[in-house]
Amino acid sequence: MMRDEHIVFIVDDDSRIREALCELLASHGIRAMAFGSAGDYVNFEKPDAPACLILDIELPDINGLDLQSEIAEGEHPPIVFITGHGDIRSSVRAIKDGAVDFLTKPFTDADLMNAINAAIALDKEKRAERAESGKLKRRYLDLTPREREVLPLVVSGLLNKQAAAALGISEVTLQIHRRNVMQKMEAASLADLVRIAERLEIPITHSRRAGKPRMTKHRRVVAIVDDDLRLLESLEDLLESAGYLARSFSSAGSFLASGLSGVDAVITDIGMPGMDGFELRDFVRKVRPDLPVFLITGRHELAEQHSGQDIGGCFRKPFDAQVLLATLANALRDPEMEGNDEI
Image 1: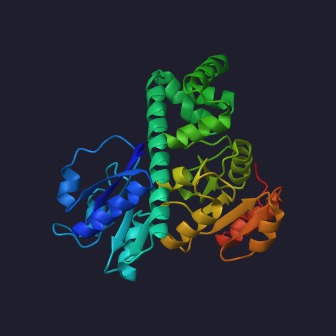
Image 2 (image 1 turned 90 degrees about the horizontal axis):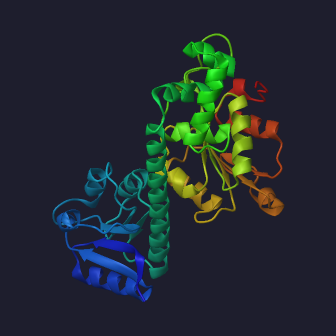
Image 3 (image 1 turned 135 degrees about the vertical axis):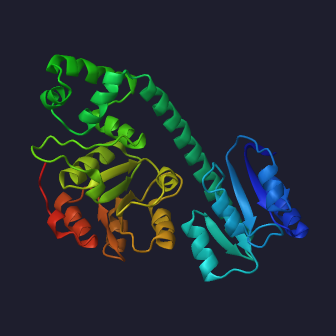
C-alpha cells in the first residue's frame, strides 16, 4: 500500500535509473514521480506534501548543483544527490548548500533509503516550522501598535518601570499591554515570548542594565537543541547570563531548517526523536567542521565514552554549569566569557 502522506521526486536522465528507483520506492510503499530533466521537474505542479528530491548531478539541461542553487530561495524538498561522477569539491558544495546526502553510484539500497527517510523527516520538520511561523506572524499582526512597541521592550529584559519610562506611559498601563501581548501571542512564559520574538526576528536593542543598549549582533550565538522544554529554558538562562545569545530548537530538523550561518556553537541532547544528537553532530561536521558541538545526555556511559572527543565535548545530566561555560568559552577562544556569573 502506498503512503500518500509523502512523495519522492526523481530527476535523472537515465531511464533505467529512474525505473529502478521507482521500483525500489514502491517496494517500500513510497510514492515516486520521475523526471528526465530539471525543466520537467521545475514545471511540474507538485502536491502539497512532505517530499524528497533525488537529484542527479549531470543533467541534459542544467547541472544538478546549479539547480540546487537556483531553487534555494524557494520552498523545495530536501535533496539527496546521486551521481556517477562524484568528487570531493562537488560533495562539499552540495552538503554546504543543504543537501541531506551525496551518494556516488553504485550505492546500496540501504544507504539510499536512509538518506530518503532522513530527507522526508527533515521536510516534515521544515513544514511544521513554516506553519508555526505563519501562526506567529498572524498573532503578531493582531497586536495593536502600542503592543508591538511593548513586545521588544519586554523580551529585552527591561523592568516594567523601565519599559514604561521608555514609552512615556504608566507602569500600570505597561502591565496591561504586557499581559495582552502574552495572551495574544499565546506565550506560556517570558522565555517562550523571547523565543517567539527571535522566530519573528524582532530586534532587541535595550538592556535592563544602565548605560549603552546591548546590541545582540556582537554576542556569540549558541544553538540549543533539546526536546525537553525545561532544559531549554534553564540553558537559555545560563547562556544569556554569561553574555551569549541563545537560540533554542526542539529538534535537529528545526535547527537545520533555520540554517547554520551565524551560529558559533551547538549544544544538543543525544536522545531525541528523529535525528539524534550523534547524527546531528556528524551532519554539522560535514558542513562546518570548525563549529563546536557539545553533546548532553542523561546516560552516564555515553557521557564517559564521548567526553573530550573532537571539538566540543560530552556532558552528562545534571552537569556543572560553570564547567560547561568554561568549556564553551575555551572552544570559542573567548576567555572573558569563561565562568561569567553576571545576571
